[in-house]
Length: 329
Ligand SMILES: Nc1nc2c(ncn2[C@@H]2O[C@H](COP(=O)(O)OP(=O)(O)OP(=O)(O)O)[C@@H](O)[C@H]2O)c(=O)[nH]1
Ligand SMILES: [Mg+2]
Image (cartoon, rainbow, N blue to C red):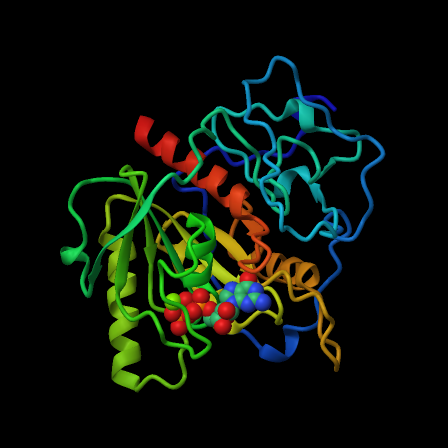
């Protein structure tokens, strides 16, 4: 396929989302029934025309197979070219096949995601991680200017667990079966050069109304004011159908031009629930469909599990490419 025939791809890295006017009047009854999106077939087998790496493309890190304990039975994903997240300065002409879709098993696409690797994906390994401080306001957060990534999502979605998985420590961030465990903005310094930020969850029904509003206010203020925030990682539970509150949060981030990566959690829970429950990849597909109306360009997304460490190395590579680009521009 000739490159000029490809759909227009997003080129912005730091502000990848061009939100349309969001329609927040969701009717929850429409959530379970979605239009089938033919190209984006999560269960399709490998494309017969597997994309190959262009030998002239920049040197990319090898696909890391450090996930010794990873579930090997992850489904292959076939994804249309225009649904990829393509970092700037990244040539994807070698990925294009006649069908307009690529297999997620391409070495240039992070496994279980729509994220294309760029030349900025280097130095992704975590060598050391330390808790620095908890803050109740943006003004109290560290002032050393290091780039940071914030983990946000509904209470109990697995933010603290993901942080622990990323840094390969069991209890650096405190987790709990009960929602509402994390209540402040918690900064963890990685390799003395960047931060992971664990935030309180939203939508915690048991929290008193005032407390909920206060959390919401300070986390949203943090997103709007924190100049060193490279990207928000919005965690979504992949074991349940899309929730209105998550769709609203994604839309709010887009409207406010806050760069966002969608992280689907708990993908190890593969058992189909009774009464029409769906598998993680089906819920992921449905969520994409629902947010399509808010964004002109597909935001980056990735499937993870803190139990099997699925997606751990891939998230770290994605954070590395976002961070290295941010540092250079
Ligand atoms: N099966 C499975 N369980 C998970 C995963 N991630 C988290 N959990 C479980 O989900 C529960 C909540 O995890 P946390 O990491 O504390 O969730 P959180 O989003 O930080 O919650 P709050 O701080 O209350 O907002 C715990 O019981 C975890 O063990 C996952 O990937 N797979
Ligand atoms: Mg937590």
